[in-house]
Image 1 (cartoon, one colour):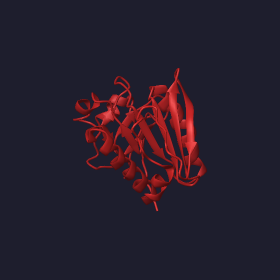
Image 2 (spheres, rainbow, N blue to C red; image 1 turned 180 degrees about the vertical axis):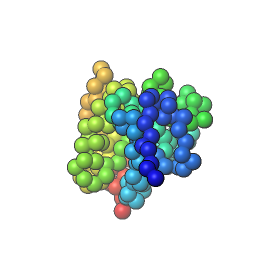
Image 3 (cartoon, rainbow, N blue to C red; image 1 turned 90 degrees about the vertical axis):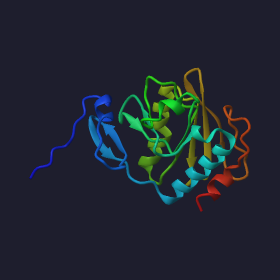
Length: 191
């Protein structure tokens, strides 16, 4: 018996697909590509940040890896490790945890870099470009291998580097000025 690959002609068609599992897929050239599970280290770092932000904000505005972003380009969707929502997203995401292109962008997305050059390029280049295109005001790249947190801020439609912090450096966020967090605390969560 031959199994036929599913092809989706539009993102809306993809959104109506349900295979009855909790598997996450990226839609790449109309085909589903299963998103591999995150490493334990990445999950621990992302969870630490999720809990930290949940103490600062309404916890309903803080979403982990399961939140889906519709993006332009390929793949057509991304699953950031952490996303800070706008207040209006709370109600919009009750049925499906997907931020569409037609919605306002989230305030912040965080990616924890997985080992390997392909993953580094994906987080530092491809996702940066897609998140910039969406108009997401702030993007963090948390790199456990380099032990650095890069904070990018959207300025006139282009991401500019606010800073790259490591060790005992305090992270600086233009969006979340009340943030009191050092880079070493972030990486200690993954050890």
